[in-house]
Each structure stands twice: as C-alpha cells, then as structure tokens.
Length: 268
Image 1: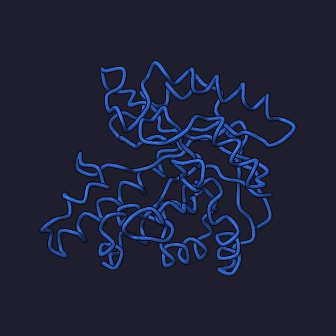
Image 2: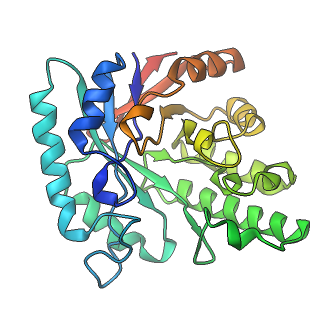
C-alpha cells in the first residue's frame, strides 16, 4: 500500500493549492491513500486566526473537515482519502485542543513542535550567534517537549521529529542524552512516528528524523508511518519508495495508517 499521511493546502496560508489538487496529485502518483492534514487553528487564542500565514482560522476548521469528507466520497472509487490535522503542541492548552478535536470526525491527529521558547524553529535568525552549548541546550529542550507530546496521549502520529535542525543543520551533530530519552518516551507511549521527507526543502536536507534516531526507534520498537509534508501538490508522495526501502533495510517490517483514530498495520 502506497500512502502519504502528511499534506497541507491553501487554508493554512503558506501552502499552494486546494484539497482537490492534493488528492488529484496523489491519484496521479499512484497512491492508494492520501491523508489531508492541514495546520489546525490556534484554538487557545482569542482571535479567529491568530497567525495568518501559519495556520487556518478557527471558523474554517469545520469547513475544512466537511470539504475533505465530501472529497472522500467523490474519490472513493479512485483513492482512499483519510482526514487528519497537524496540531502544534502547547502543554498549557491541552484541554482546549482535546475538546476542539473531539468535535470533528477525524481519522488521525499529527502532533508537532514548531515553536520553542515562543519562537518559530524555522526562523534562521533565532540561531544566529549561538554557541554550541546554547544550541545543545535548545536541542535538549526540544527533545523534552517532543517526549512530552508523545506522553500526553492526544496524538496518533508525531510529526517531523528532529525538525529543530531544519535551518540549523549543525544542531543535529550535537550529542545529548535527551535524544535517547525522547525516543524511549515515544516507544513507551506507543505513539507512531512519521518519516517526513520535507527536510529536502530546508537547509538541513534529507528526511526527518536523522538516521541515528531511526536506528534508536528500531531498537526500542517505535512504530512508523510516512508523510511528505507537502505544501505543494508536486511533492505528494515524494520519496515514498526510497523511504520504504530505507526503513526495510533498517529492520522495520510494518508501518501504519489510521482510520477513525484506529491504527492499522501494513507490510513495508
């Protein structure tokens, strides 16, 4: 089964194309299933759209799910459309997000850390002038926050683990026991981790997570899924076969998709 569980569209404000364009791209790519998973609203903020160009408005969330459900029916004889969402993880707002997600018929939730200490991880300026100790400290705080997101029980999938290296590739080479703690926490929580190919679009290159984290994931029994994190229809399913072969070579034999919040096993 060929699938892609991580895609975006124009509602978030920084992706190109509507939902139909991504589904059509998945059909053209020969996928068996496509997951739509745009950035969820910032539910805890008072504004309808707290961060335009980052995440959809709260008033758009129901329309997003309704449109995805209509497209699922329309394309049922060509491809399976799975409906998800990618949510930032804010520990202080967990209950607010749980309530908002419980009101929609979702197939899965991706939990991702995009901000650390209140600053976007993709901002190159945040890393300027930092010494190695500061970068290592930031990596440790990031790993601890990902571990906490795994343990909270809200998410089915953890998105782009190791994304902290996106615009600061140097950070990936800074060893810290926090990485091992993070992977152990993911395994203990039995939450699925995605292989995300969008590192190809960032300074770091390659995929998330790094090979050493994938090796730890295999050792500790972490379950995997796949997502391109496409913000353009042309990237749907990107590197799926290369990822499949790479994780098989590492010793993984199953990966997973989700229907109605139930995890389903698929041979690699």
